[in-house]
Length: 506
Image (cartoon, rainbow, N blue to C red):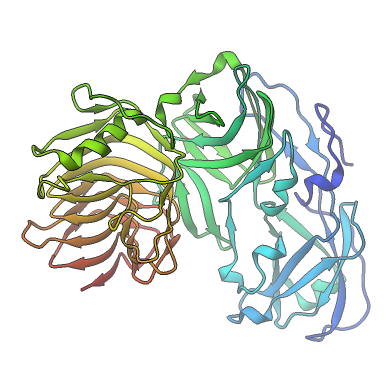
């Protein structure tokens, strides 16, 4: 029996497809024949709730149902042809946990199904993926956005006979994180970010947020952070619903809220490990009195640079802007240390240069101190070398973790890297990148470094660096390095979820 959760009520159709198993069965007519119209039955159940915050005591389920226009994609799991899959669309307006769907009998013998169909149509089964990027909640306590992320597959593969003669049972692919927040009076949220300090996609049980994985379980992007845009949430008190893929977090969790006036706040939740399990709801309550002000970490379009630095320590976004503006004019080499995380919301990013851009190839060093740079780094029309760092010469860059989408809007863009656009004899160590990067016409795109040109310099060195994403776009891409000129780089203990590790050796 379905139950309505006691602390809120929402229209059944708004929550859509979070499913489980059903014993309802119906035998249909006709024998399987490829290409003919058939009707199949599919069932779902309720979503169990658990809690994350220690002060949350309410339990229950979310009431869910099939809705109008719902559709899933059925394909032979062994087929190599994307045209073999077929879409099945609900008959009527839904409203229950079991519904009839109609479509064309797919070719093949052994099938699985993927919901929502729009995220799988035109793909083979091995190409289907769960992608959690781009979540946006429109309105306070709205769940409408979840329909695009309620990923489901069948509990087991089926045959052509099963397709018609059994009620298909779907299983959850996601968990839901329900977060109640009270901000200071007068503040309205623009973005919600979850952050964990440790992320290792190469462990057998990886820590960190899984942003993208294949339907077969292959990890394609693991990150320290996951975020959701909040629009039309015009109150300092709001409830957010974020879809999360199953994962294990280690070392605690930060809930960070970035407001429309560039202020920002966070609440830290301490634990050794915590696992998100598919098919469950997790709840956290963030009170105004729990919040820590982190507005100084926000790099926004109207930011004014600091006047100077304290012992070359980058303690705020304003300090970072000071470095960005003064390093290109500096003759003497300096070592800068990041002492805080940075979140970028500016509409344009001018990459940090670890060289004297106008004074010769003077080396500067950056110690990221294991801090995280998140948000979006947008290259509009300025940088020929682009990343968090644009270019460095014989520098040391260490302990920097970038979990930002690097967006290229420059038509002739080259040398784009998750950490650095181009290295000239530099050492990059203990760094990681997770995010989308590059562009359709971009040249020399690398997960860590866009390109290496060691002309008239020592060999660039890469040690203990991780590219935690496969979302690289461009003409020449590499999981670690996009392209190499005039160099035989020294590479040790570096890993990438994307191959090949080096795009081109030119």
